[in-house]
Image (cartoon, rainbow, N blue to C red; front, side):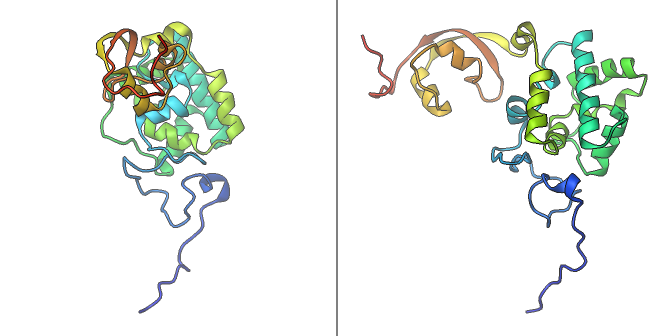
Length: 233
């Protein structure tokens, strides 16, 4: 059997590609599958919208938050700072978008969503650039790959600096009441204990998979009790 030579392959520049996925045999322009592993170093979670928003990019990039001038300015400040870190000093938001495109970072799932369009138009008013310049940078999959190029210290700094207010955090999810909550099954599924304040856990875990909600109250229904879940009476 003939042996394939890898002589023709060129190694990616270290500064740009070392955290792209850890495999020099993967082309930078190849789009990863939707269910691929997260590109952030040390993270082995599935690369999807919920994971990227919850575990990586700053809260201000969550497009579920209603638009305001303050939020738009914080988003713009983050994108400009991100460009400085992953490209070079003096990088504009437009430069960052072009850099992502050249790296092969394209949005997953097709066209722009209304919230994405609105956020891009709001940023365009502040920068006097075309709104379509920012569409890709507001996509979770593109942001996630750019985020993977940062160091751990840079990621922590951005998460702490570009956070949401308490009111903005509440606005992301619709308020809901669960009148038939299988709390025992839910706790096992998401891996939390039932000791302490349950509502504290619910702030980080939505009981629904497709639609995230902010559960304010519930009527519990225990069907599968176990010794570790039983409350003392």
